[in-house]
Length: 112
Image (cartoon, rainbow, N blue to C red; front, side, top):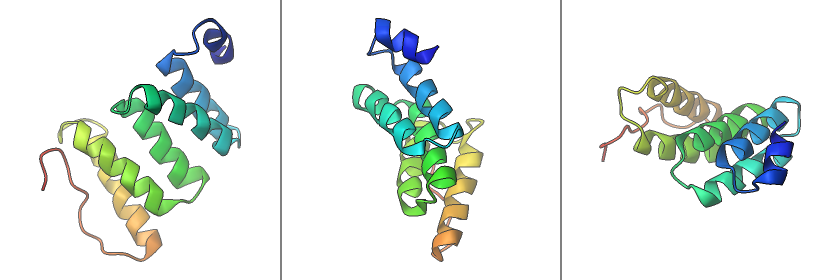
């Protein structure tokens, strides 16, 4: 379905994100990240695209350091009280734990 949307509008950011997420969910993480990166090239501050990229890097690719950078970018864009902000901060802590690094809290919006 998303591929059909993209044939008609190759700049549809939401279709790119959802196709990337779907591909990541069926074991095609690299291909899925390509679509998400295309969406981010068009809309670098898209929280949904950042979320999908961070989850894919963390869960499918075990690229913990890379996922931290994306989670922190996401956190800089959303209010600290946002529903997903707590989950993102927890993901940063889990990624740091898997890297054997310090367990300091992830910064939120407005953090130094």
